[in-house]
Amino acid sequence: MREITVVEALNEALREEMRRDENVVLLGEDIGKYWQGAFKVTKGLEEEFGPERVRDTPISENAIAGCAVGAAMTGLRPVAEIMFGDLVALAMDQICNQAAKLRYMSGGQVSVPMVLRTPFGAGGSYASHHSQSLEAWFVHVPGLKVVQPSNAYDAKGLLKASIRDDNPVVFCEHKFVYGLKGTVPEEDYVVPLGKAHVAREGEDITIIATSLMVDRALKAAAALEEEGISCEVVDPRTVRPLDEEELCASARKTGKVLIVHEACDTGGISGEITKTLVRRVFYYLDAIKILAGKDAPIPFAPVMEKWVAPDEERIKKAVKEIVL
Image 1 (cartoon, helix red, strand yellow):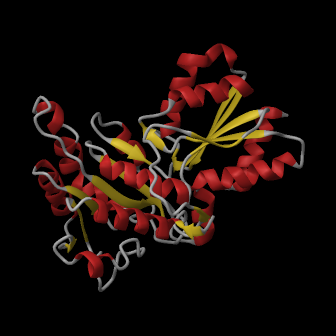
Image 2 (cartoon, rainbow, N blue to C red):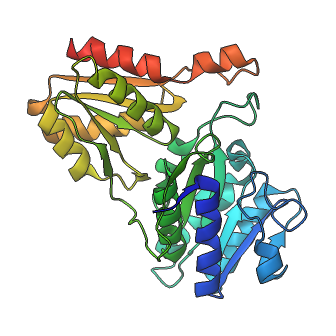
Image 3 (cartoon, rainbow, N blue to C red):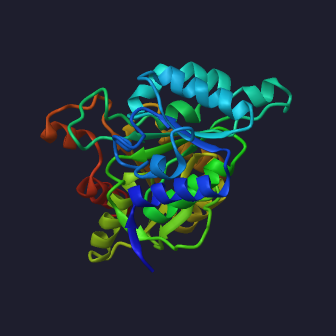
């Protein structure tokens, strides 16, 4: 099977869904033919579908999200791009008070089938205003679905599923997942929202990791295998809704859990995962540990930026603290 990058997989998903459904439209800053997206996810799409369906917008995140909400309410399936995830702060009213609530407040008369795509995460010295992981903001809001792909296969399948969903989806793409290559079939497929994936089977400990941390957890697990420690790595894929059944099954199997995410520790998705495990499989557990980003703004200096987010070595150390 062919191997492509996550950027190429996302581009294919958009292209295929736009060909499949003429109601799928794209909007965002610099997504058209002159720049083709800050990370080139929309490359070549305006040339094929025209400026009516691939709309370059003014530099106004609030306007981008608001237009997407209105378009979704009137029958389109907009995919809106916010250039950097941190800038969702400028569109929170439209996302959390409008998109998330309209179906409920209209008694089901209105649906908002929109996707908000945005790159999160540290690693490129983009500094404090362009490097955060803010997925937990949206997990807190009923009515939103929140997706975090970790590889090319999932990125394509999850984006296609999100576009076809009748509810608003916040699609969080890590900047340093974009370049990862993976096997992706050419035929049409979707990855269902709310279904976790066991990325590696193991016996001694479960590592529940999200986004880029899945890749780092898999590398750590491979190294630990050589030291006689068998790690199971579980990727939730979507953090709202969580696949509680799969997470609990793995935790019950190994009895020990390490939860890894890049977002800062306080208020992170690890709290929801821990609550789920304690509520459902408490008596099967010997240990739960959380390894998250530091509670600090993301520094510009590369050496300090590396200090903030978990890496392979820290994952290995945390596993040993639990298992040994």
